Length: 425
Image (cartoon, rainbow, N blue to C red; front, side):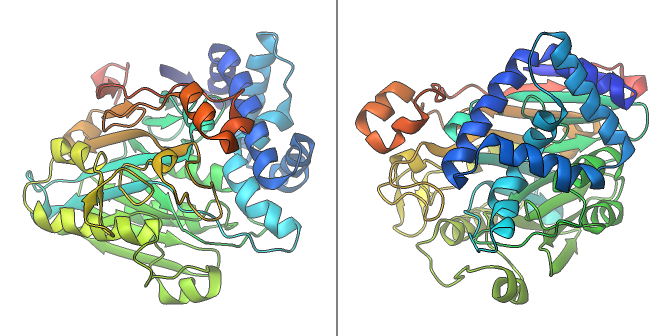
């Protein structure tokens, strides 16, 4: 669905909450169930963390927007409150990052998502091309189906994908009128959290709204970094053609930049120091999803150097070649992830044939970004469909999610753009 929001923070929030109230209620129910299954913590635990740990670090602009969402859903008759909305916004950093911190344990974050950004001699036009597919559980992923077109009173106009109720993208794909092209993939097997820091969802939203250069984006994301939802950010400035990879750990930060080259993401950490100090990742194990997909990304970049455009980008995020076996076999090691088809699953996340993988994909080039546009495909962009009832019948271990799982059919690529008049961009 395509949702346009504009105005002051509280007004943007109220529009969001009122328009998407049923979807927000449904998403909160699914996220709460997923978090409880994965962490053994009930929703009350996350509400309390939202109030006591996160809220004091949220700046006034985004407090106003979160209040607005709350007022909007209440106006539609939903019995949700502010802490439900804050916890929902922070679910990606509370579950895998805050919970281990609160228990003084180490539970490394699993790998998910595939992405690339390229420029210069690697692309057909010489300008930036980028793409991303989001990996998550299919229960949550079926709800990751909103394109938000947001024109705030302050900052830049931006268009991003997202979930109902979130003020940020969550899987982080978007473009803004300041020239930024933004995406990321999580750092696999990472652990670390600083409760004194600014929530990741606030920094990600602020960067989407206010960054107009690679330096500005880096500054916003690193100031007050709490380690939550630690990502390797792949970012580009369409005005200059320069791209960057910002590996944002809690202790270690690595920034690489180029005007002629590419960066890829499949959850592999880059910095040897970050790997040693903040992860349990083994960069030598080519059977691991993150490494297998990294190899495949490099193969595709080299094979198609000088030809990369949005057409090829769509093919890349739909790719089924398993670089470990050399066979076309959709599974957890392919760029288009199909963990539901894998007898191995992903260690630390979901077991064999777990209902998870790529749930949607997005692509854009610099010309599209200038028009605040991108193309997106809901479901697996490769054309394979996920059928919930069939899957839970065949795999009993997935039945806990049966009340929340929906069919996830592969949808055609669709162009999304701003509804604002061109002279307002």
